[in-house]
Length: 86
Ligand SMILES: [Zn+2]
Image (cartoon, rainbow, N blue to C red; front, side):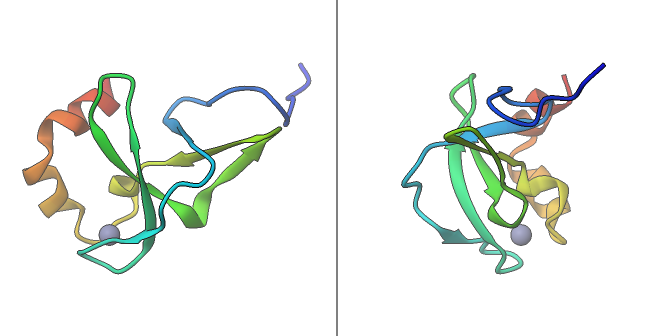
């Protein structure tokens, strides 16, 4: 099975990052992130350090997974985390 590395859509756990997204800093750890909106309408911080470019689209993974202060995140955004784990 060949793994296509272009224009293949989001992988599990990835979120599409719109072009021109605003760069922010995580208020907990200072990492560069941007905010996307999940399919369920929740705001989600995405790691800019781990963006994957596929064709003309960028995909990122949740900053919740790498933030050293993720415990605090989870407390504040439990509903979002539960969406990811589904
Ligand atoms: Zn952080």
